[in-house]
Structures are given as C-alpha cells and as structure tokens.
Length: 314
Image (tube, rainbow, N blue to C red; front, top):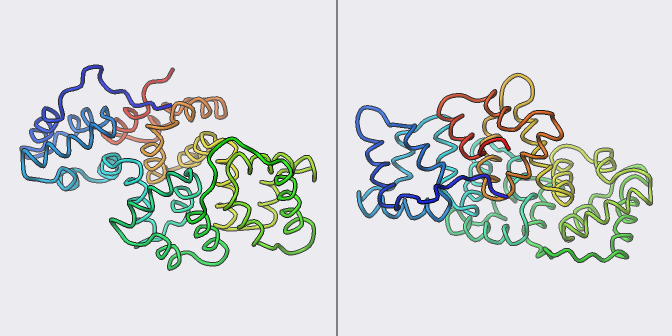
C-alpha cells in the first residue's frame, strides 16, 4: 500500500507548473514550495506537470530542478519525478557507470517482479542501451551469470506451486552446497533465476524440513560477497519483499552516519507500492517507527521531502 498523500482536490498541472516556476525565480529557489508540491503528486500528475512546464515555459522541468536544487534533496526529487520503470533505469545506469554500486544493481534487479524487469529493460534500452551488455561489462563470475539469467528468464508471477519440483530443487541445492565440500554454483543460478517467488518460497520451506536448517543459512555458509547478497535478496523478496526493505532501511540508518543513497532509493521507489507494509514491519521489528528513524537521521528540506513521502505514523 502506498503512503503518498495527494490532496482530495489537487491543483491542475498547469497551476502546479506556474507555482514551480515562481518558486525558481529570485536569488534562491523556494525549496519548501517545490517539496510541498511534488511530494504530494502521484506519477501521472508528475508527468503532466512536466508536460505543462515544458509547454508553458519552453524549458525542461528536470533540468531546472537539477540546476536549482543540490545535495540529497536534489537526488531525491529528481529520482521521484520518474515513473517506476524510468526510476529503476536511472538507478541502474548510475550504479553501472562511474563508481560501481553493485549492491544497488542487485537490489533493483533481484527485488523486482518479472513484469517490472521487462518494463525496466525496455526503458533502459531506449535511454541508455543494452542492460545485459552493461551487466556483462561491469559484473563478474557467478554474479554476472545470475543477473543475466534473472533479467532474461520469464518467470510466473502467480501463486501456483509445484511441490514435487520444490522438493527436487531443495535436494539439488543441498547436493550443490552443504552436502559436500565445495559449492556448485550452477544449480543456485538456475533455480534462483527460473523459479517464481511462490515456488522459491516453497523450496525454502521444504529445504528446512528436509535438512534441518534454512536455505538462507546454507547460502551464507556456501557463498560470499555480492553473489551471496543477490541470492539472499531473491529469497527474502520471495518470502516478503516489504520485510526485506524494512531491514535494508534499518541498516541504512544504523549506528553513526546515514547511508543517504540507500535511504533515498528505497523510500522513493517503495512509496507508491508497499511502503505502508514496510512501515508496519519496521515498527514491529525495531521498536520504533520508520518516520521517527528518518526524522532522527536526516535534516532540512531533504528530511521534509522523505517524511512527506512516508506519511504520518498510524
């Protein structure tokens, strides 16, 4: 469920475009007004505002936002202005070029449903080129094989489960990992890239019943690095993606300092999908609200923007 709050009677896209233009005038940008407008508009409204702004002022709104904002608030707002597929494409493009952020690549690819990945690939291709080729160049080893397979295979998104197949998969994963010394990564790559979330979740349950410990523990024992992170992301999102992102948010704000890049990415990409569930799971697991955590770890217009997306505590 989304946490985005949109006014019951929103101004027209033209009215919003005019207000934004006025916010940019003068010696400094009225960031409060920018946040107040854009943090309370859904994807369709944001797209229409951009169209009206371009038509009325012969100027690209994204370019103006980029010029007038800076730091974390700039990154958050610019990411927010895209639709989900465009946003994911932008994240992957940045993560695969310049400073390589393979964990961001893994998070986006391995947490998305097959239909979302297909839309993402189309947008990425139209704007940046071949996603598979970029993964080929930037990733390596078993991780490269897993990511390429994961974006290429068409998986079922339904709840249907083949129990016999799940048992065979559990056995194959045990034989490839815990049964003997050394790890055969190919069965992990094949099963984790080809099975639906429901199928993989069932395999996880049967693995525990058959061998006495969880598949996640087996992955931690038998793999390492980003390949381990990718497998765990896939299995955790098969079980409960909202729980996965609640934990990722906690880690981004845990201890001294805040990982603003991860915090921004998750809040912006999950606001219009399952953020209400993430908030509930965060409070249940960590004993404080996500809103409180974000308020404590951020400041200024950046804080206001994220809190606006998160909505109030229930």
